[in-house]
Length: 443
Image: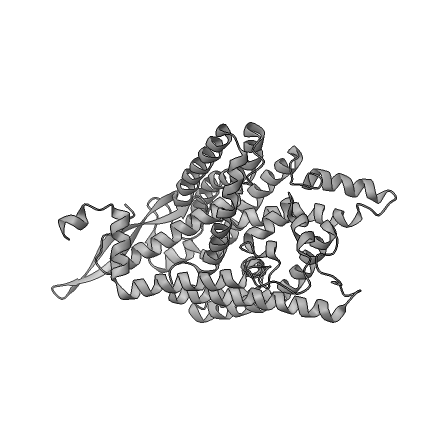
């Protein structure tokens, strides 16, 4: 490496090295091209959309803002890709939960690559009806917020137009899933995560003009919030407990076999559940307000009950802002973190795989004692991951109390997605560079 290139910052030099390699450059350009296609599709609108009513429906609505994250902003345009990859994510979560519960799915998960492909096919099939159900529910909910955004939508009004709209939304979802899988196979990073990441980043420039309405203190608070949250996300995403493991291996020397001891470790991540608990918790929390919004003008004893749920879980017409909402959300995130972590842990079958490989944890007997020990370790470190995710979920509430910043909507869930995707993509790019004997940029 020349003196000039050595003087460059490591990150800049790594990017230069990446573009010098033809195959890595092709992967990067392919990923960027697919993101351009995604953004183009996100701006192709559905027919018969009332733009004024759609804009009014999104003003200060926390439910629609959350759903818009997973559509990459396409829901705000009510485009053919308005559902984003959310139905596919829901189908993936359902399949992961069913694997330890359904013997057939559990057997497929243990068959290796062929079984995983079959499960992936089932996930695709499940995503289609999920897209129909979620598309119908979301458009009905949007119509309930500010009049009819799509005229005549509903099976009781125009069944054929409704079916055509739902088929269009399902096709848009599966098209985005297909683009995501192309990115995974031929590009850099996880394709579905890249699609969500691209949508969130694409919406950032539109938030910049809102900063002009804030004071200097508000801007400093927002900047400090972003930097501090980014540091916490990186710290907890990369945090892991390394459990030491010893294994025996055989080697031939001088015509005789010798047993040798090797050492390794099991990296148990503190946040093994990722962002899935946040999705679960927010989905549960928006359900009461969504159901109650249909009965706010029904009259009788139902109307005050419906208004109570709308006020408590949606903050009235605007975003969710009551203390009870955030407290329940915090508890749900912790519960779902433990639930999903245990599902993930049981699928990995660590103790069983260690015993098959002839490996063991020093001081722990193989079999059930190893299983019990690993379960204790996972449970302890999951407390840290659960409280971290709960803190990420409720942080906007405390930022609003301290700074009273209203002009700029801050989504900690969006921060978590963006930072996690960037870290994963950087690791994959780092691996590509190290395979070609280049110095990476992750120390």
